[in-house]
Length: 123
Image (cartoon, rainbow, N blue to C red):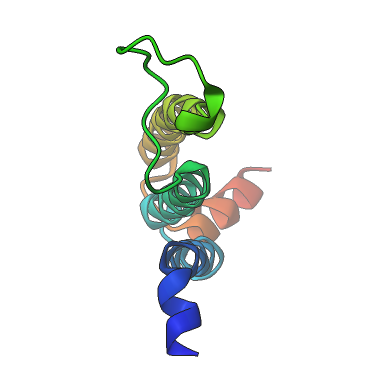
């Protein structure tokens, strides 16, 4: 069992990080903590993609010595997906934080339940 976990350590760590982020997203009432939970989930997905795309002993797909054989290089698509995901994640985090600031300015709380209660009182 120990050898199985050690051979798939990146997968196990990604799953644990995803579970921590999901629990944070579901059980926290504070909007900032929910955003942090979503970022932890994003990071776990990037770790999983990067670890699945890496093959030990192969080089990055940068041809410097004229070797054009694709079998000597790792697949660049997971790396590209991770970079694209990071850019999208930063944008989504900035949007969520700006909306959280607006909610705080209007309702004077970061607690999601209290903000929803105040929205219902306004109606």
